[in-house]
Structures are given as structure tokens and as C-alpha cells.
Length: 316
Image (cartoon, rainbow, N blue to C red):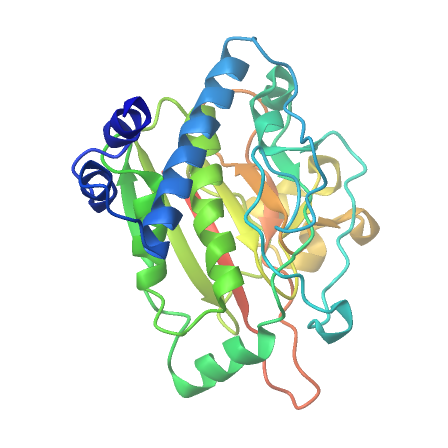
């Protein structure tokens, strides 16, 4: 009885609480929502403990092979695809400067030393099945387009981030593979919680799913807002440059890319599935204004563009 009352209070005025009160079983959707709710709660607990210095490092107690890489909490169980059948992924180039703090989990973004870097990175491995052909076909058929507005403006405390993830995915008109949908939904929750803690002055987060093909920003630039977290789910990730190889006069006065970068060999990139948090020009303190750009457009052997699917979490 006490367990039923506890669970009912965790999910007030929901189908889950009504089912519990009436001793009725849950269906699969109820279990999914409950798991997302519970995991979001524990993320908040870990982040609050980290904020108060009660914990220094959050570590996993088991290998994380099931979901795309290091995480605060145990991942959903998904089937790993055969690596030989994956779309070819570009190899990331590691940073050789202090520009980026590389953490082992998202909780590391909240460590004090994060304030000393322009960007924060958690490296992960994709575990979802290859969906490149599905995405390209959907773009070709017009089921999903680069100009589609798949965006939700989230006000802190308004709704649960699990609801944001579900609502955002409903805006995607193409049918995404279920393992990819689960990963995006979990990223909305986990990344959203961490970004909210990193940017406590902002009451708003903007979540976007975008297709990037021919119309991407391939010029070096700095974002004219506070911050952005980005995950690329296929093909190739974001490219960035340490300040010491940037000609800022060319950058600020419309120079072309080959004049902006002094040493191309020092340009860095993040990998597919990595979580990359970039501080923009309006970030209130510390190093900021990371110079970056979209990767060069890639093409298949038949000349058609290789489309990318990305999740963005913006702090305006």
C-alpha cells in the first residue's frame, strides 16, 4: 500500500497514477513515461549534489555499451547494429589546446574547471542502427526538409523534459528508427537538465531537431547568443578552431575560410554522437565565443548530398 501511495505521488493526475489507484496494470507507454520521469528525477539529484560539492565525479557501475556513450545514468537497452553495415562516419580530430574540457560524463560539465574553457565535450559512440539511407530517402521524398521548423521553446518549470522530448519527436514527419528515437528522447532530458544547470540565469531553453544538407553554415563564426549544446547523429560532427589559429580580423570582417584559419592542421572536430556544449559571445563569464562551423558538405558516390540529423539545445 505504501509503495502504491509513493508512486501515485510521483505521477499525480496521470494515467499511471489512476492505474495504480485502481490496481490496474501499466501498458508499455506508461512504463516508458515512468522510466523517463524517474531518470530525470535522479539526474536532478546528481546535479544538485554536484552543485553543492557533495560529489566530485559520477561514475558508472557497469559498461555502457547499449546507448551511445558515457552517461550520468544507466542507458536504455537498445540493440547495437553491425558496425560493418554502418554509414561511414568521419573520424573526429582531437583538440590539442585548452579550448575544450573533455569529460567522461555529462556531470563533468558542472565541475569548476568548466568555467575555464570555451566548450565542453563528452565523447560517445553511436549505438543506434545506421539510418543514413532512411534519412536521405525521406529528404528526397519531401517527408522531411531542411527548412522544417522542429522546435520547442521550453520555460524552466513549465513541463517535464520527457514531455518536451515526446513533443519534439512528434514534429518529425519521417519515421525514425525506434532506437534512434529513444536516444534523442533521452538526450533531450539529460542534456536539457545539464544545460539548465550550466546556465541558471536563463529561464528559456530552445530544443531543435534539424536536417542539415546543402544549406548549412560552412563559414567560420562565433554564435551571437549565450550557448548551444549539439549532438550529430550521423555522418560527421561540428568543426571548431582554437583561438590561437584564428585571424579574428578576417573572421569579423567577412574574410573567406582559408584566410580565417592560420593553420588548418590544428582544426578540430567532434564525433558522431558526441555531446558538444559551445559558449557563445553572450555567455556571461570566462572564455567564450568558440569559433566553429558546420563540417564540409559530404556527397555519396552518385553525387547526392549526405544529410545529417542533429539535436540542438540553445540558450538565447
